[in-house]
Length: 455
Ligand code: GDG
Image (cartoon, rainbow, N blue to C red; front, side, top):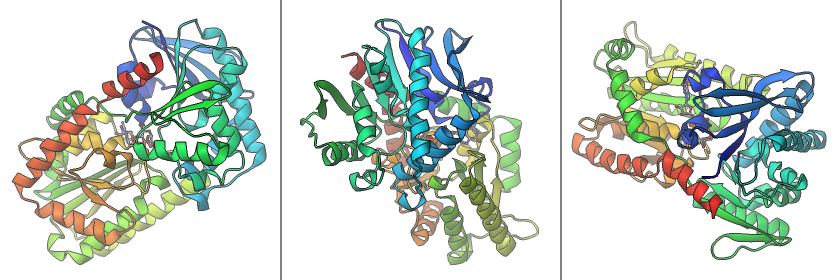
């Protein structure tokens, strides 16, 4: 079998491999990580200059090869074009999108540096699988260096509607660079349709009925391969977690109240301010539920060097104080807000304890928290998933209570509906959801994508 070479912006470090840090990519790729695999990317460390050679580390037969980023490149490539331009634009938030031509030049330079550092590690026959928006140009740079291996690209975040992509001044260059891949994958049909529409609108290239595009004689197949989790393993982890002292202490602290849980990286796409507003609206509209519910929101720190993320943290601190100030009693706190990273095992225990999983991103590529929440439930007495219709996960999780996250009244209504939902309805929804989460698993994701890349 061909060796798989995974290329992503960040390569997981020891803490992440041990489950102590948040990371959606590692969860989704777990199945592809068989001995012999090579994972290449940024170490997460900054140096004076971006490295031209890699450092290797082997864990469980998998080689992790990394480069460091120069400080200037980190600012312009990572904080700048990747997270200040592509991230908000691809999440369809044009008003938050800035563009700086110099940052884009550095983005291209760093994509070229990734390709150059990877080149000496490649062998004939390797399947190269590039991940995410930071590396849109790597396949094209590898082609310039003469690489003829099969190259695939998977986008973990949404692809914007064509009219939004056109806002990006170098949209034509970026789309052409993407077409150096043999396969491009998205989470949903909507993302794929947006991409095909953008290629048509910007480059004037139409796709065949099977989503095949041709640019200068090179053929690219565009596929939908939604990412998933290993549901059975996660259910087992949640059961183990429910027996742990920490989870028992959590249950005790609830004193019989229903727990509602939210788990997110602290990011403006996750819709956290609107979520807290919706909870405030719920407490004011349904006074009968006050003291009967406790909302635990975990917001794992993320991209803290970016001003917008700092401002978001301040806003959430303020809103948390406002809700607790208005509604707390001496023996009840409506909102528990943890602005830190929590271990995966503890999170699994929280999910299993929670009567409601509240997942309300404004826009999300997939959202693995929704799937984890479903997998963690006790089938005999399952909780209810409330899910934003703008998460990629909504396309495959029909039995969740779907909400529009900016319509805070509808979210408040959904919380009420979840709390009063009879056991048989909760069970029926859960059985169906669990089946879907098990079917669209992490291993199906890896197998489908690599199969498309192989053929
Ligand atoms: C991107 C796309 C897409 C969260 N807090 C903690 C923690 N987590 C874990 C969750 C989950 C993962 O991190 C987050 O995954 P998501 O899918 O929700 O979101 P992103 O990180 O934004 O990931 C997203 C994903 O890529 C995969 O394609 O679904 O749309 O944006 O597993 O449980 N884990 C730990 N502590 C925390 O505090 N240990």
